[in-house]
Amino acid sequence: MSPIVNGKSLKPRSGSDPRQIVVLLHGYGSSGADMIALAPHWQDALPDALFLAPHAPQRCGMMGAGYQWWGLSGFAPAALAAGAAAAAPAIDAFLDRKLAQYGLTEAALALVGFSQGTMMALHVGLRRKTPVAAIAGYSGMLTSVADIATNTAKPPVLLVHGSADPVVPVAALHLAESELKRLGVAVTTHVSLGVPHSVDPVGLRLGRDFIAKALLKAV
Image (cartoon, rainbow, N blue to C red):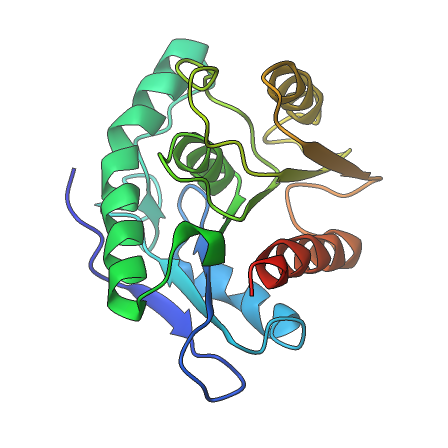
C-alpha cells in the first residue's frame, strides 16, 4: 500500500498550535476535498483542533477524479475485511506521523469517516494499541470484528445512517451496533429518517458534539 502523501486540511481557528487532531476519512470515489467540508461546521466547538482530510492512496478506477481505500466491488464480508486490512497500514502510518509531528497522543485524536471511510475509521480506530478519543462513522459499516475482542483500544463510537440509504443499507448500522456492544464498545447511534447516502444537519451536529465532548475531556 502506498503512503498517504496528500489531502486537505484546516488549521485551528484559534490560531494556536493544534491541541487536538480530527482525521476525516472519505468514501469510495471521493476525496479529502469533500470531507474537509465538515470541518467548518465543527470549528466553533473545537477551536484548537487541526482537521486533516487525507486522500486515499489509490486512484479510484470507477471515478477518475476520486480516490479509494481499496477497490470496492461489492459487500461480501470476506472481501470487505481483506480490503480494510490491506488499507489500514497506510492510515496507521499517517496517524503516527501526524501525532509525532504535533507532539500529541491518541487521547487528542478522533477519527471520522463516511461510507468506505467509516469502514476504515472503525477498522483502524478499534485496533490501535492506544485508544483514540472517539470514532464517528456516517453511512458505513463494520467490516470485521476479528482481533478486536482481545484489544484494549475501545474508544466510544457514534454511528449515523440515513434510513433511505440506497448504497449501504441502514441495516449495517444495526448490525455494527450489535457487534460492537457485544465486544464492550460504547456505541451511540442515530438513524436520520428519509435521508439517503449523505450527512444531514442533525447528523452533522451529533458528530460535532460527540467528537468535541470526547476530545475536550482530554484537555
